[in-house]
Image (tube, rainbow, N blue to C red; front, side, top):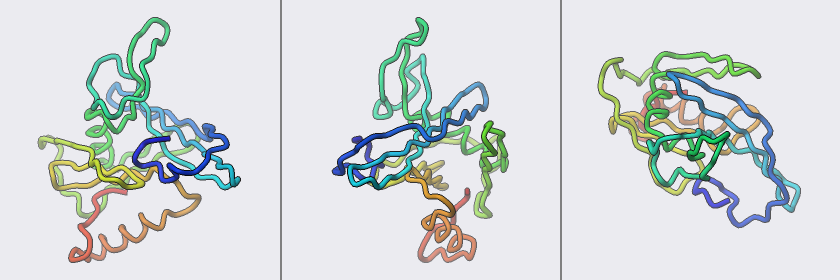
Length: 181
């Protein structure tokens, strides 16, 4: 794998398989949330989140392109869904609304942090940071950051828990407050 968020670029991969496939739908957009288990030659494994979208129009950032597809005569592109601005903005609005979605195998809970003061109806502009990191960070209106954890952990993610604690305690001299969960 060569995506910048994949942390084990130099490791020898024995196999990879889809562990969980959830469908997330909003505003006419469909996102396939894949949790992919990557097993290495050492027999250790990691699980990664890969949100995918099939696009029939070029409304995505080119670096998100994974493959050209023809699905039942419908030509389009398979892309990393975080490279589609309308999907990023829909995700932000769902966090703003504390949305809970039934995704078949459970519930996807989106919880707004106390620092999020965006008002529905305000213009919303998003961009994906290109920093070399093991997650994906979306910036909204140059004010809010939404971190998507690509490497998943069973149980609580320590990076998320530390950020949330510091943000809610308003330790802003170290870390800007988070507005999402």
